[in-house]
Image 1 (cartoon, helix red, strand yellow):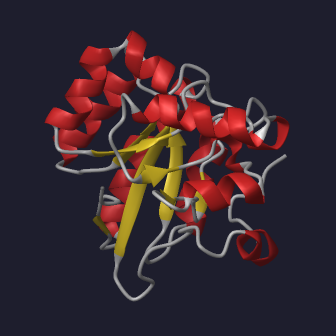
Image 2 (tube, one colour):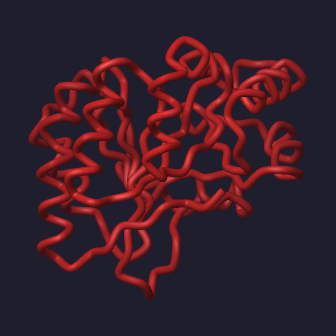
Length: 204
C-alpha cells in the first residue's frame, strides 16, 4: 500500500524537505532511487540520452562501490546525484547515530548536498542533523514501480494522472522495478513532452 501523492499532513512533518519544485513553471524532475545497478541504470541512461533529458539519481553507497563505472557514467552524462544512505537504511528502524554514520559513509562516495531517505522514512532527530549540510528531497509523484502488486500499466497511470508543474517524480533503477520501469518510463516521457513539460535536474 502506498500513496501516489504524499498527503498534506505527511509533508507537514518535514516542512524543510523539498516535495515539489516551482508550481508556476511547466517543468518536471525525474528522479531514480537505489542504483547504480548493472543493466538497469545503464538502460535508464540510454533512454535519457536518446530523449536529451537530464535527471537526478539518488544512489546507494554500497551500489556505487560495487559499480563505480556505472556511477561515473551518470556523472559524465551530466546528471545530478544524491545521497541515499550507504546500505538503504530505514530511518524509523535505525538508531540516529548509526543512521547518520551510514549517510556520511555514502557521502564519501557520492559528493552531493542532496539527500533522500530510503522509503521516505526518517526520524526528526535524523532530519535535523542532515538538514545542517544537505537538502532533503522527497517527491510529488510516486510511480509505484517497486511495488509487486502494481502492474506496468498502473505504474504508468500513476505518473500520467498525477504529474503537474514542478512535480518531482520517483522511479527506481532497481532489478525489482525493472520490468515496470522499462514499460512506464519511455511512455511517460512521451506523454510529458506531448503535454508541453520540460525536464530539469535537482541541483547539487
